[in-house]
Image (cartoon, rainbow, N blue to C red; front, side, top):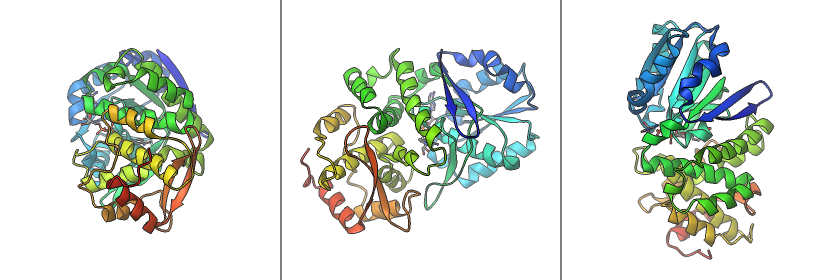
Length: 366
Ligand SMILES: NC(=O)c1ccc[n+]([C@@H]2O[C@H](COP(=O)([O-])OP(=O)(O)OC[C@H]3O[C@@H](n4cnc5c(N)ncnc54)[C@H](O)[C@@H]3O)[C@@H](O)[C@H]2O)c1
């Protein structure tokens, strides 16, 4: 088993990574759970069938447990699901000594975390990530839901009490979700850890190469990047914003897709990272030759340009409503080179031109 600690100004908590570590919950979390009154497992319909009963069985000797589920998918990061979960908290009699377990991918982590952050002004929660992507979302304390006008617009910072990453749960993860999750790992490597990037490029030629015993090493290294950033800037007053590399266009693509599974979060982020790399070049802000990177991402099956069904104007409208925008000004995280990210506010007309040209393949010097 691998362990890391996440340290923020208010709180420190462990991240345990290992195969079948759910069975070790009584040892790992016994003292934390000892004084808790009740546990509520929040999961989605897919994950609950696979691992809900198992986690319940493991927790039951320690404290009373119930389970509530929401449908799988991004649509569940909604006001309606949030209300359903708070109703479950009240009906199940959760109090301030109770604990929520978020069993699932990033959707469940964000939604259950936000429920924990706001129920009775905040109760503890434990992240139990079951997707590769959730190695990113389960650490760092960003919780929230979407509004019909934009993604993640409603939320709170609320750090979990622990993260239990049972890599055994990844065996049932569909291929497209491995690809989606690996994009966030690549993002961590690009913004902060060029050696890790090199290692990934050497070892991962296809997504099948991620699904090996090396996964626990990859996870530890990638989570370590996030841990370092969160330690320095828990509330995104500075460098934490670099974690949004690829997300300005990525979130706009997701918003325009209607969150209906046409494009996964990671695919959208990958297309966004490629656009940001090209943008850094186009604007003369980096001399970095990005063709090798784009070839690598393409060979892993990621979209390397914004899919043509989304109108450029609508993508820009979505970017203006993004959390990262200020006073309607659109901000991108760009790279001078791997490991050297910076924030850039772009003129809307110029962005329109570059995004239109990029789609027509006119601005490629990569
Ligand atoms: N809070 C943060 O810091 C942060 C960071 C990155 C992403 N996110 C958020 O994470 C979300 C995306 O997370 P995601 O990609 O994990 O999506 P997800 O939670 O929707 O999971 C993807 C799909 O995989 C299924 N699934 C999950 N675990 C499984 C398993 N072990 N076996 C089989 N199927 C399984 C789910 O039911 C779902 O259908 C987005 O909403 C994004 O905004 C948050």
